[in-house]
Image (cartoon, rainbow, N blue to C red):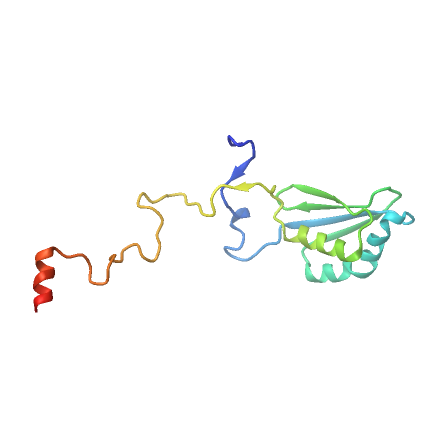
Length: 155
């Protein structure tokens, strides 16, 4: 925690993901829905229509459908780092559920917190951050002593 009261960290990737090949962090999706409740209508339509397309696009994700009498339909996302995230699907349409499930698939499972800096290094430079004009002269001809400038102009 910082002095502001909100947690923060430096920008990192999960286990340097993407350095070699990309590994999707979503491991399992569990849908809980009721067969009769009107609040589960969108989830039932999603399971009948769009869950097959999602499974084909994401072959590494295991999908469970638990039909049981419940008041609020939910989806539980489990990630490789052990974290879980539960979202309510009450009275959602198929399009809303599709965007929510895709958002869960794109996340890493880490908590969403404030990033301290957009860059971070283990061995910081004492000279400052590099930019394209670091070693360039400030003027076209460079800076010269006055005597040299007078002789160059007279020639």
